[in-house]
Length: 328
Image (cartoon, rainbow, N blue to C red; front, side, top):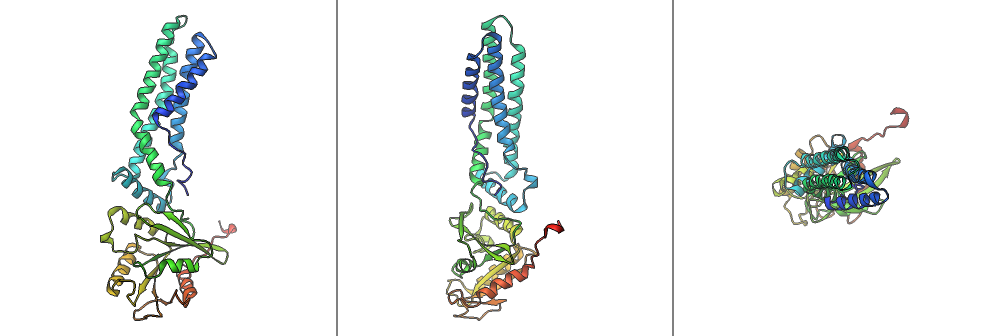
């Protein structure tokens, strides 16, 4: 996942301590003009290079897959309490980039001001240079803090491969979605913290003709009407629309899930609208209790009846054909 390997963002105080302590060591190894020059050069290099690394560690959001772009934007809108989301992060990174260039410039500027032959005067100029660098770092203290918070918030996003064929399951709670995901997934279900819910997103995998498929359950998002979700949760649903290749919508005609069939149908209509052109396969689960609803598939996860047929229907609805190496 593109955000999981982002390095920890240092604070301005940490960077200043690192820069000035190494500058002091560099100065002790020399004397006179060369000592002051080395201290200015070392401190400006450490500050400028480290700040530059903070900026370049982030991906170019213009090339990020739409799924992760929208999801990251939603996370950052919540984290920053700022509707600009990713654009707010870009602004913070821009300020840090400015500071990276400025600290490099200050190193060159104050090296050029060093008078030769007067030790006290040279030390005074070097201290002035240090003070200016410290002032620059103070100006971006909040920017570094914001970038650090953004990194911490984004590194926990669920690992969903937007390029892999993906089945998204939806429907009210207790209609059997998680049981189905567990039943059809050959690998252990991966549960990751989801940035908008108190529950974890579940991602299972299975293989069809040597192609690895993903099946995703999103408790807390696609299990209730849009008007019960906040704006950022709805944006997360929009992000899922970029990753999903087919929707399996579960209905419980027996209503033992605790929700009226009329409400379940209304939610299905909402999900179909939100996911636009993504195929939607309607599944009547708990068919051993009731089949009194129009559906594309009827099954009972509890009894193991119709499970494989339902999975096959989802795969067929996608019509996924992998690109062979000689076709690229």
